[in-house]
Amino acid sequence: MQHIDDLLVLEQTEGMAFVSDNLWGTPVTPSAFGGQLVALSLAAAFKTVPENYLARGMPDVALPGSTSDCPFVLDPQGYPKAFPAMIWVTELDRDHATPAPPRQQMWLECPDKQQRSEQAKQCIVAMYSDVHFTRVIVRPYGIRIAPPPRHLRKIVSIDHHMWFHQEADPNNPILVDTWCSQLSSGRGVVQSEMFAHDRRLVATIMQEGRVEIDPSAQLPSPKL
Image (cartoon, rainbow, N blue to C red):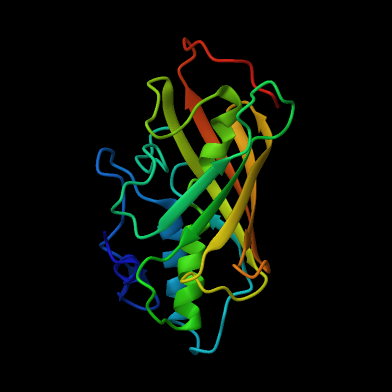
């Protein structure tokens, strides 16, 4: 398993620019994980302020993948064991005939239990905010991401919005409640709330995702 701190390492170049040469992706696709890009953006911002500063929100993080030829495909194969998180997912929409938004609940926990600064904890929470997130869009069609069906061509994040309400320690389980409130024309809006192990609401996330499905595929009618 790759160490999560290695995914947050940045090198400063000229001026106030920072780069990373350790982008995590699934082993079978030329992809990068959008959650890491969000966390790296926050980590770069923290390098420009004192250590006692924390973020209140990330209102508009534009992610690669808004065009059809972009190689940054997010969450196409699920998350292999190499990803630094313990993940438990509960699907709440098994009955596709139910006219309700697709929903999932998931627990995330950092496996190494190391002590970190509050800024580092917030970066990890930001990274975890995108785990199994956009995939909720295709759930009304009966599609599951891992393993990916052949008719799922692409699923990408267009932008990512996150607001931090309270501090959270990823060494303890974090509940992520996610649902898709809108799906049309190959795009969906996904919302999520993150709760600490003591039931405090610690963050709210919204994201727009884009989906490409083979038009020849025989899929059930969506329930949205």
